[in-house]
Image 1 (cartoon, rainbow, N blue to C red):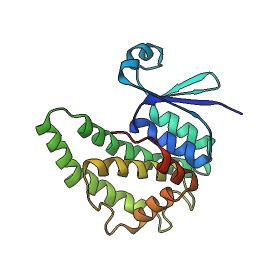
Image 2 (cartoon, rainbow, N blue to C red):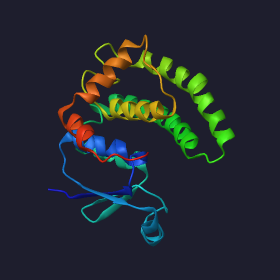
Image 3 (cartoon, one colour):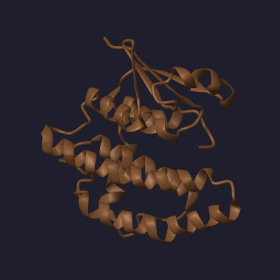
Length: 202
């Protein structure tokens, strides 16, 4: 049996999708959370000088999308066959574009600029994105086929992150996406993780 050690800062950030995937797949792993003061000593030992990293049987993986995709495959959540996997990847890539903008707004220190970024998110980025992916999700509440994939989980997480920056009923009149969120949150492993995970500021 493989061993997994996920290292990231003490927050959800770019590691939370992977944690959700481990939870959904019922896969045990070591969830290592470091504080800022520990980072300078660790940074030179990472492949590209950033986190998260995932250590699997002595091999270190970097890049959050690569790590999440790997865990999705191990958990059976990557999609069936090349076409389904490509469709799931397509949704994930689109979601990650939005996540980058959410993260930029969250970490912006200039309050005026921060307000502008949040306004752009709320008025343009999120509505356009949600309108597009509502068409991609099926009435059963999945982006790919009729079962959970990492694309559903990735979408759930970016919506959670965006909601922290731009409160509101973003899924009003979006029944397919509403069902996606329900399917993710009611997965037994994910439901348990959401209830028990550490409470953090990001």
